[in-house]
Length: 316
Image 1: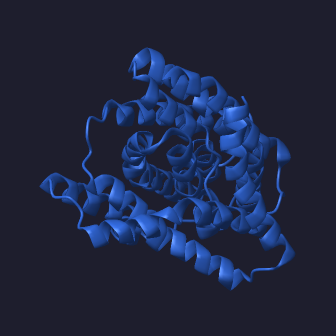
Image 2: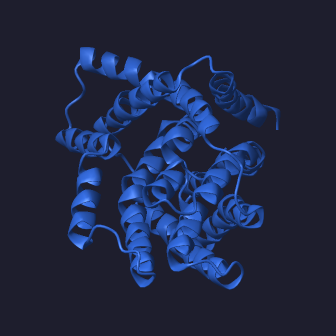
């Protein structure tokens, strides 16, 4: 357990440092935005490109099928809970379900898994990230649009929806870095010495800067809205989703230990800020989505530590 704490505490210590700095106002909103820009557009793409450019190696691709099977089961269960228990509208149900499945893969899962489990595990995670936004964003967007249409509050039309979705995915620096890295890795060519060193330096900043930026960004969220519904989202995200993922990985797809650990830890990560961003885009479910991001991130210190303690011995 001591080794787990030695791994997890520094990670969440960086999150806490960022949160304190943001809360105290020692960094302006523009400075925090600039740090997020650096992480999202430079540091993490460099880390992912370098990992992929070395070649995929013997990766178990069934991790993708296992992960998104668990995502689908959890998503459908969350929709049912939102409808039966909380009687939410169709558009709000989609956001409830998104909060239950959309993990913070970029700012938390990447630094956590690369640091705690190594680059081989990081490559497994990259397979999940490649499809994460591509699958979840369009599905949630369509469900929200349908829900608003039924309520007579339709948005800007299906053509604009399709164009904007495809455009946002095609210009996403994470996806571009993954695709470019995979393409380079398939050539079999080693990275030039200067390029390897450049990517190593830039990618090395990804974990600490991402964690610090996550903490600083959390200061923009407030706990508000229906707390029963918010805590239900948190429970779905931190407990139900990883539990379903564990069952799917172990008993349905029978993943090897490393892939199982990566899939379960990724599922157990807190709700990503994109849940709130999606809510803000449609100006609905704002309080509960913001609260779910903040509370799940705080509680994940405990849940992720316990999961690492359970999963890490299976890898030795």
